Image 1: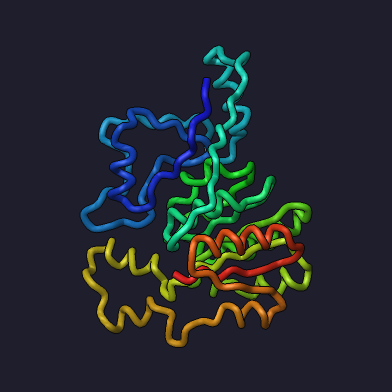
Image 2: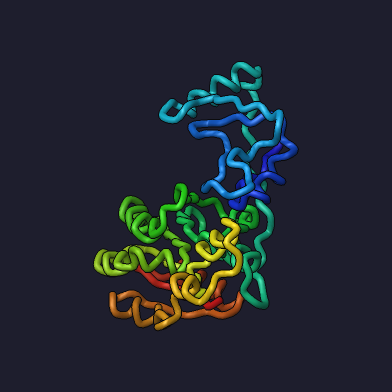
Length: 274
């Protein structure tokens, strides 16, 4: 028996359909079969390939751990020991910032027993697959399209686990929904590193505009998507609420900022300028 790398089904319909086309059976555990987030013109809502069978091991609200234990007994492998995911060497990246180098920097910088709250909807798509080499940590993802989820959940996680460092990855558009979380983090001196991916746009909305087949957005549509007039000063925002902040523009500086934050008590903010 060997460890299996956990991967996420891609968010985009075309990529998800391609990813799932080789599966003949899908076993669900307290969830439904993979479906598209929106109903897109000319695209399927059910993402499995034709002829794929879906088997519910545990319905939503049932005891999934018990269900998995029963499955192990039924397969006659209860005497085998589980194999943990093998760690690979997480090397700090160099060069420009990209989804891949960001994930590599994160893998190298995460301390043992950290908590990672991920709401980086557009920048963090590659995070899970490229953090295989990271130290053992917990990952908390948002459900569906719950924008603004990241910073308050990170705040709650840090209150619940004061001895663990919490990293919160969030886009600048999402962060603006609940940025007042920084004030609470400073007031309670919580061990949270908030990472803002600043592309000065609601990039997820731009992508959905294209997915709906609406063509290239015009000037008025862009005005509702871009958030650069005026551009948000994240360093000043953090300072005004009592949180130390730094800005980074390379993979090296991003890795260093995360590593530094893990060694210091209290909250900090890293603006990743994309």
